[in-house]
Length: 68
Image (cartoon, rainbow, N blue to C red; front, side, top):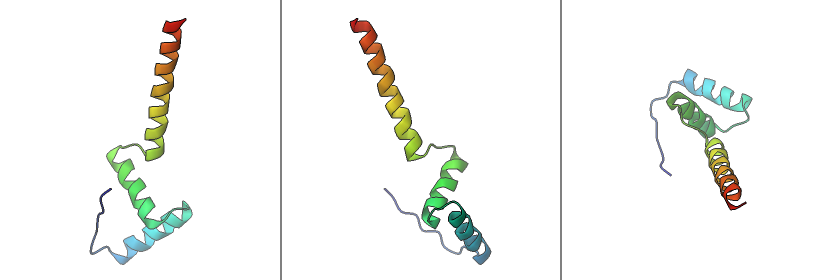
């Protein structure tokens, strides 16, 4: 994974981020990752994992049906 450093964050912005993270039970870093994913329309790692599992299950069902 990569790292990202953001400089010159306004104090009000940082405070708002810290409060939002605390309200959601997240660290500030996790909160920023979630904000960025949402803004970019990307799935969370959990959503991506769930999607892959569903694909595997569907492929297994299809293979089972063909083998009957």
